[in-house]
Image 1: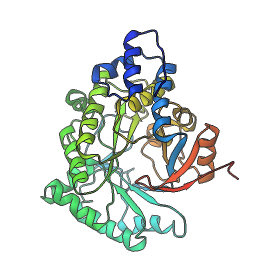
Image 2: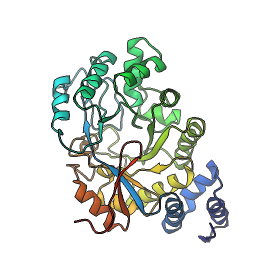
Image 3: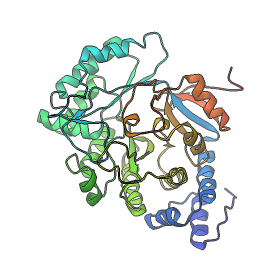
Image 4: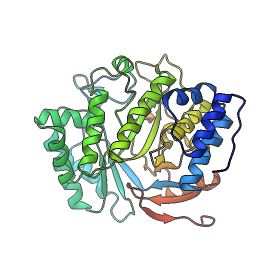
Length: 374
């Protein structure tokens, strides 16, 4: 690519030249981008990568969420969503029949994915979820089921007394098609011990995703940013994901997740600014060179920031959601009722100067929206 994106900082000029040649940058260079790159420079550099890979195409899918429970045996300090198992008066626990009713509500609608995540409930075990998966597939066999964070998987598989490969294979055979990326938070052990000490470790998270890839299931990856971590923690987190992707090529997309501080044990920590959010998307796109897609989860950051992120390396906005997730609304996200119709999502993408493309979970194109949407 014969293009220059000049910057007053010589180090950043060197990094820019590497990126534009298609060369990989290292952790120190990633940190330099965070510390010294201004938002315009980072946006241009990330957008050049996005345009080379995807042009103006911006992906979304038609999906809905099922959250089986917000009752959880773990107590993550950043979480506003879960309710402790021993004190769960205001928690919810859905039965299999109740969850199947949510699936049946979409009969006749062109939904392609159901996303299933929730708290870690001791009574919702491997047997419970394999039964749920089979039941969903019996009702709607074409529906892609993306389900269970590595935290949920680690708990249910260990409780069943089997190894990760056996447990994931059981779930896959029952109907689980791919994994979401939740539960990664920040891999650094010191940070993890302060914000989520009692759940699965970084090594366990990575092993679960590696095992899923090895048995043929794709997955996503996340990073929770904007709390007590620093830029190097972010860079090292992304490095571990990039290294695993080199081995397995099983990740579809990387999703930076913004820390929200409402009603949790870290409410004293101020949230990041929109500029910091956009910077983080841009650096993610630049550093995560082997990840096909970078996703902005619009219910978490709001429609305005999501639209702006499309000029900072982001090429995916998740899906229609259909007012079916509470994980971020309970934490004070911009979207308290996260639902966009297909028409609204298409308009948001078009207004940002991009081309809306409906995809399935694995990024097969369902439909490209040409011209002005009517």
